Length: 87
Image 1 (tube, one colour):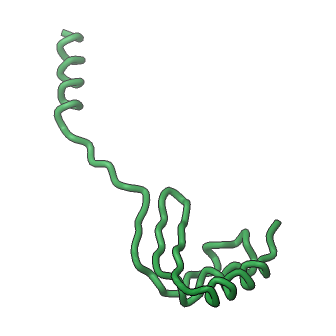
Image 2: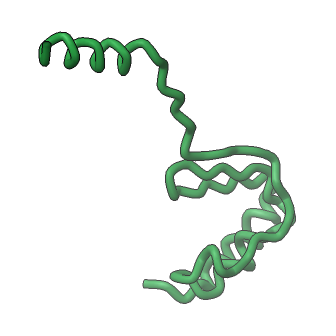
């Protein structure tokens, strides 16, 4: 009887599909982000919120920001990036 109940429970568990939700999102987002998202990097908000930001994605705690621009925009970004106070 115990074996039959165990098999019934196992069969019941295996019959119903499990829905898994992704741990991330991605999209076009040019709204300014909050400094509270980046407490370990003082001064990074000038780089994060540049007008050249085109795309943002977040997956399992890793955030990726994509930018688009010309050489002048890259140089301006590098100048802002050099001002970040982090080891």
